[in-house]
Image 1 (cartoon, helix red, strand yellow):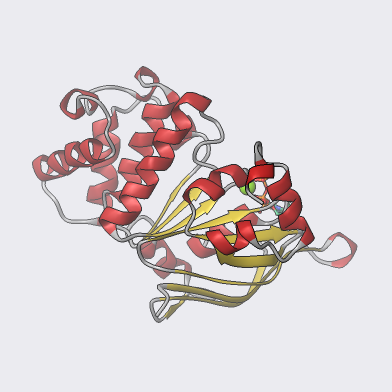
Image 2: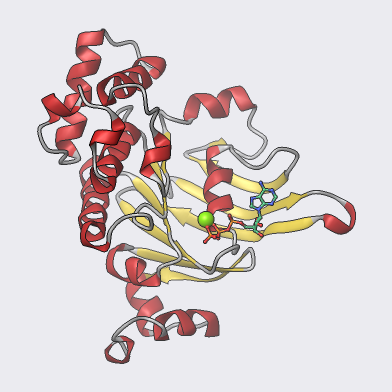
Length: 263
Ligand SMILES: Nc1ncnc2c1ncn2[C@@H]1O[C@H](COP(=O)(O)OP(=O)(O)OP(=O)(O)O)[C@@H](O)[C@H]1O
Ligand SMILES: [Mg+2]
């Protein structure tokens, strides 16, 4: 059984002539130990799909349909219960790692505060877990890193710390929204390898959102293609890339460098 099942998800914002139908009958699943990549042009609804799962849809938006998370219906779930899932069972990493951290607090303090907000743990135990997570996400010198401040790290290292913070409470679902887009190309591949490792080692159901089809064709197990708020194609990586059904998917594949060898 799928860990997360989105069925006919619809998101509407506003009313009258300015109303926008942002997600239209979006359906797909997330499986444990699997990276599901969502591709699509800017404005196609990728981020809003992730945010709906997190219970963070825009204020006043109307969300209908179903998001079944291991038997719990998330659409219409009271905010308090969604809050409790967020950070513990459902975690998210965003594009800009710098914005994920408070500039004036040490990395160790932020990781331990986050853990202690959700779980009973002594300061010492929380610090031990923070160091363990920084080690897992391959931040150099984890014992030293906890004493440092966000500005003392490069973008790539800070994104690794954001992943450490995302997994410190042992979530089951990890949403990564354009995790490599703001980073130097030289560190992007390392971050994607880290995502793969975390997915495999922690048996996470990963939703990887990106406008970069090249990223998905290298790391996603399953690909979901969105266009204007709708899912136009979904399938395992091999079949989507070698045998795309939709013109839009074909155009994404054709725009890949070296796509002529893909077939
Ligand atoms: N807070 C909001 N209120 C109203 N509409 C919004 C809000 N946030 C996003 N939208 C609209 O929802 C649609 C989908 O946006 P979304 O951010 O999900 O796109 P995206 O696929 O993630 O694009 P990008 O690749 O640029 O990140 C867009 O038309 C956008 O203008
Ligand atoms: Mg987005």
